[in-house]
Every structure is written in structure tokens, then in C-alpha cells.
Length: 465
Ligand SMILES: Cc1cc2nc3c(=O)[nH]c(=O)nc-3n(C[C@H](O)[C@H](O)[C@H](O)COP(=O)(O)OP(=O)(O)OC[C@H]3O[C@@H](n4cnc5c(N)ncnc54)[C@H](O)[C@@H]3O)c2cc1C
Image (cartoon, rainbow, N blue to C red):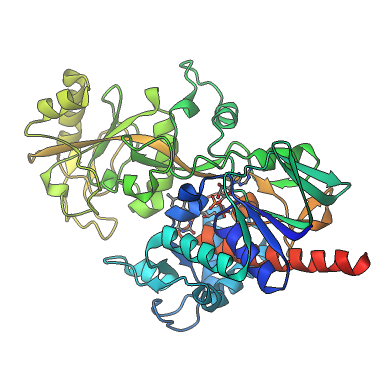
């Protein structure tokens, strides 16, 4: 029988597997995806948020514990466990040498992102290179890897892990780490959580999933059915507005669009529906997924003119382009009369002051509902561009409740040999909201803890036998 069974194949699972193996345990990792698609949402990531008290290789200045903690409190609105959050923060200061020892390399952000250059260490080659490095290291250390091995059942003996089932195959182990992500790719679950709206639509049917198709929440559901304690709101997901041309799964970061605050966003009826200039885009992009989800047909259209070009990171895929506004309406399939009315009303309401996209400037609208409160310039300079937007789900918030040892709990009692890491428990630290790089901080910290704990639990079982 193997000592430690790790279920999942992303960052948290790999950190757990490597730590357990380094502690001397025999380890088997079961990844639902085929080898080519291994790595879960972790293959799409770019960076890790790191506490540091002085400049460190790719990180400039300092990002002390207290500031990181305040940032977390702000984005979660207090829905965070301070003990666990501080544990994650401190671990983020010390985990990188270990990551490097397993082949992960870091680089500074490419350009124009000084605020993240202070707080976030970027992975050279992105998340794909990170998971590939961890898989290589795991293989070298003798971790057994199985792909296309979706676990569909967890067998418990009271509150202890007994075995995992892949179809009809029973896989027993002395201890287990669950690291199988959220349930964002479970269409039926999303549908049930979002329900039907007043227009008779099922909004979740039109959601795109930014990451892997394999995070279906089967194990989360299993554990809940067997009485494990949970944390987080099942109806909540981190959702951004992304390029509507993105594939149903795995579009990753190349589907992002950063031009919303430089123009207007219309719905299917060619009406504006929210203040596009409310705040800086990095602080607002995560509310736009939900805003678009509430629109008829769950679609929006970001409209800009030539003045905006060069002021935002160019999207990977070109937008729809036209030399006139009626031409753009036609190409986007929007009602030309309503489109013209909305744009004319917006242009007439713009009060142009000193345009400055690096601060909350004084360019705003007057007498328009909804207002655009900053960066409001008339859309009047051809060529004009339009990008269709859809809600893109990053991850769900519901997870399993843990303490500092990352054990799955039943009625507040921690299991002796069943642990959980990554997105499956991230809700303990990140009850709502998001700030870049925290997902990887949580997964790395708790993946490593869970791996160490699982190895110790397995050793204890052997000693007791
Ligand atoms: C486009 C995108 C960009 C992101 N960028 C960042 C970033 O830059 N920084 C950051 O901190 N966070 C980022 N995130 C969030 C980040 O992906 C997560 O916080 C982190 O990767 C989660 O790691 P994980 O190991 O818990 O889950 P995942 O990496 O999703 O891994 C889950 C694994 O479990 C496997 N699995 C699922 N069900 C089963 C089953 N039943 N049996 C066996 N295996 C199963 C899956 O195949 C997958 O391998 C991003 C997310 C997305 C979608």
C-alpha cells in the first residue's frame, strides 16, 4: 500500500506530493486530466504574491506582513481566518528557494507594472513551466504519477481516509491529500447555484471557464455528502469579463481585455449599464464578469475609438473594427438606431478635463445615467473598435474547512490522515474577492503543509501497526 495518495495534478497537489516524498513517504499522484492537459488551473498562472522585508532578486522594495494582511482583509471584506492568512503570508516569504530547488524560475514583470513588481514574483515561462518543472522533479524523486485517473469516490473509515475509487478500482493509502480544485467546470452545479433569471434564462449556461475542464468538484461534493465541514459561499465565484470568442475551457490569460475603462460597454440592447470609469481596471475587472452575467444574453460589448489604442495592453485577438459608428454597430450585430442614440448621448455628456489614465482623472459625464466618472472622452475618432465580452469564471469559493495542519474536519474534529490543499480549501483565507497571486500563495503554503502532514500521518500508521 502506498503511504500518501495525492488527488489532483495542479500546484497544490504537486507541492504536497514533493513534500511528502522529501519526507520519505512513498507517493502516488492521481491526475484526472491526460498528460497533455495536466496541471489544472495552475498551468495558466503567472505569479505568486510574496511577503518580503527587503528587495529580493525579482522583487523590489518591501512588502511587509502587515501590508499583505491589510490587502487580504480589504479584498475579502474580513471573510478570512487571520491565523491561516498570516501562516500563508509568512510561508510566501520563505517558499521560493524550495520552489527553485524543484526547477521553478522567476522573472520580473515584463513592463509597466511596477506595483506588482513589488508584491508579485512572476514565473518564468508561466504556470505551464512551473507545473512541468514540478512534474519533472516529482518523477526524478520517484513519485508515481497516473494520468486520466479521475477519482469519483472517497471511502472513509469513520473520519479516517481508507481508499479512493477510480471507477471500479479501489486505491487504498495510509494517508491522503485532496487537491482537486474548485467546481467551476461543473456546468450543472454552476447552473443550480446561479438559477434562472427573470428573463427565463439560465445565465450559467453562457459562462466561459478560464481554466481546466477537469475541476468538476466531484470530491468536494463527496466530502460534503460525508459530513466534512465547509467554508465559503457555494453561489460565489471569481468571475471576470473576457473576450467572448474564448473557448469554453482553458482560454487562460490570452482572453483578457483591458480596454473597458477607456470606452463604453453596451449590452445586447445597445444600452450602457454601469460606470466604466468607476476605478482602475485591476480593481474593477472582477466585478465585470458578474455585471455582464446580469445582462440579457449574458453578453456585453466594449467600444473604444482610436484614442484608446496604445493606452491598454493590446489584446491577443484583434477586435471588430470599422471606420464609422454605424459600421461598427452593424459589424457587432447591434441595433444601429439604438447604438447611435447611446453613443450620441454619451458623447454629448462627456466633460473633458485633463485626461490621465494613471490616476482617477476629472474627465467625467454629466446628466447621464449611469454616469462615467473618470476617463470619459467622446468616442469620435475612427477607426472604432468593439470587443464582445462574456463572463469568465476563474474559480469557485466553496471549500473544505481546515485548521493550520490542513486536515479535513468533521464537526470540528480534524481527520488523522485526510488533508486538503489549494483551491479546495482556499476559502478559509479568501472568503470572497481576490488580489493577484494569492491563489498560488495559498496553494503553495497549504500544499507543502498537507504533504508534510500526510507523510507524518502515514509514518504514524506504520509505527502503530
Ligand atoms: C486563467 C487563470 C489565471 C490565474 N492566474 C493566477 C496567478 O497568476 N496567480 C495566482 O496566484 N493564481 C492565479 N489563478 C488562480 C490559480 O489557478 C489557483 O489559485 C491555483 O492554481 C489553484 O491550484 P490548485 O492546485 O488548487 O488547483 P488546480 O491547479 O486547478 O488543480 C486541480 C487539479 O485537480 C485535478 N482534478 C480535479 N478533479 C479531480 C478528480 N476527481 N480526480 C483527480 N484529479 C482531479 C485537475 O485535473 C487539476 O489537475 C489563475 C486562474 C486562472 C483560471
